[in-house]
Length: 179
Ligand code: 5GP
Ligand code: MG
Image (cartoon, rainbow, N blue to C red; front, side):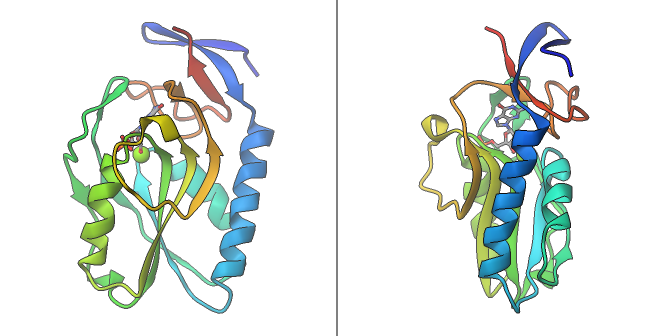
C-alpha cells in the first residue's frame, strides 16, 4: 500500500490501515449483534460515502436484516456546506421498523441532524445511528450517535468510500490530507 498519494491538487498520507478499519467494523458489528438479537433491523446506509463500510458491516451481522440505501449530499470539495441538498430513497417501508442509519463519517453533524428527524417522521419503531468515523471537534449539532468506529481529529480524509471531489473512494485504506 502507498504511504502517500495525490488526488487532484492535494496530497494525502496513509492514516488508517485496512486492518485497523476492519477491526473497528467487526467490533461495531458485535455490538449491533448483541443489541438486535432476535430483531430484523432495516440497515439504511447513506450514499455515497458509506457504501464500503456498510458492505463490510453487514457481512458481520448475525441478526436477520434488510438493507436499503438512501442518498444525501452536502459536501463540495473539502468542506461541508451544511445544507442537505437531497434525500432520495427513504419511504414508507420505514414504518414500524428498527432503523440503523449508517454513515461513513460524522463531521458537523448537519446531514444526520436532518436525516434523523426525517426518518422519525415516517413512524419507525426506533432509529439509531452508526458511523465508522467521528470528528468530535467538528460537531455543531446535538446529535445522538449510537455506534462509533473511531474518533478522529478534524482533518480531511479520503479512502474506504470517502472521496475528494469524486476520487479516492476505491482505496482500501484511509488517507489524511497533508496541509
Ligand atoms: P456532516 O453533515 O456531518 O458535516 O458531514 C457528513 C458528510 O460529509 C459525510 O457523510 C461525508 O460524506 C462528508 N465528510 C465529512 N468529513 C469528511 C472528510 O474528512 N472527508 C470526506 N471525504 N468527506 C467528509
Ligand atoms: Mg456521507
